[in-house]
Every structure is written in structure tokens, then in C-alpha cells.
Length: 209
Image (tube, rainbow, N blue to C red; front, side, top):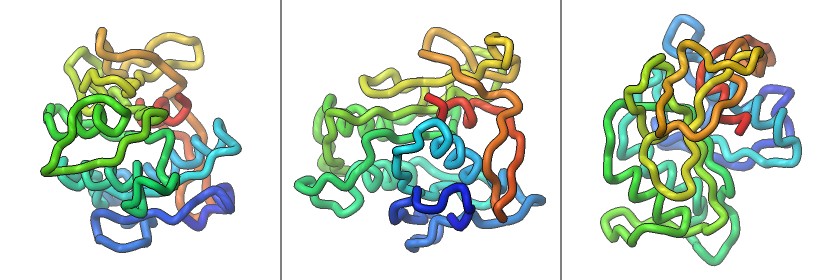
């Protein structure tokens, strides 16, 4: 959150792993995907210079999380203050994460948040009919469905990764469930400690969309 390239670009966020108001990355370069969230945020800042970013941490230092935490984070992103009458939520949500497990919870939550679906009293979420959810398709290199990208609900865009030659990156997940592709190979962006790094993945493609 202290990276010079993100100065003035961040709104208050939340860490759903440690349950506090500091969503700063935790860990180091020897532990898990350290710098992943900062890299993605830097790309959003690059391609959408007028946008404000709500930083939300949902994965631990090893890059591991769970569906319930993701659901809480999605509901927060749509309505941070819990009051549907105030327009403080995101109009675009970037999900640079995947799991091979399909869950009705996340699919229903996205559909409801984007203005479709039905109300879930067990996990209520505010509605924003202008909301778009952009999800990385995954880096399996095959057609195995990855979620939430493969949830196939209105308002969700699944993103594969392309190369500098406008071909599909060999690591990118693919199939009819992937809607678009965007640059995702050898992408330069921000990493912690005011540094820059080159990463590849559909995680880098999603923020371009």
C-alpha cells in the first residue's frame, strides 16, 4: 500500500485474513506469491489512471484462502460501509485468483451483486447493476474449468492470457468458458518496497480488462 506508484490511488480497504484495516502484503520473496497483489494493483493503476482502488486481502502469505473469506470480501467490495444507500462500493471487482472447486455460494453472490439472481438470506449482498466482475481464468494450460472465472453468471468476465504476438499464452487456461484474453506474459508492474518486477499469468491479464 506504500508503493510510490500507488500514491493517491488507494481508498481504505480491509485484510480479511488478519481481520484488520491494513491490507498490506504479508510475507517475503521466499514465501508464496509475495508481491502478487501489488503487481495486480499496479496494472490497474496503469490502465485505468482515473480509477480508485479498494485494496482487499483474501489470501495468506502462501497464496491460500477459502471460499467463505472470498464471499465476505466480495460483499465488502460491493458495499464497504454496509449501507446500500451510500455509493461507496466498487463498480469493477478484479479477482486474480482461482480454484478448481465450483461453489454455488460465489456464483450466486456474484449474480446477485451484479443485479441478477435471487437473494440469499444466509449471505446477503448489496446490488449494483453497473458492477462488472473480472476473473482470471487460471494458469493450468488446459481446458479444466477454474473458478470463479467459470461460474458463467451475468456480470462476470473470465480472462485468459495472451502473448506479445497476440497468441494464447501456453500456460493460460482455455475453453468456451473463457470470454476474452489480455496481455499476461512477461508483464512489468509494481512489487513491494517501491520496486518493479516482471510476472506472467492470467492474474496479470485480468487487471488489463
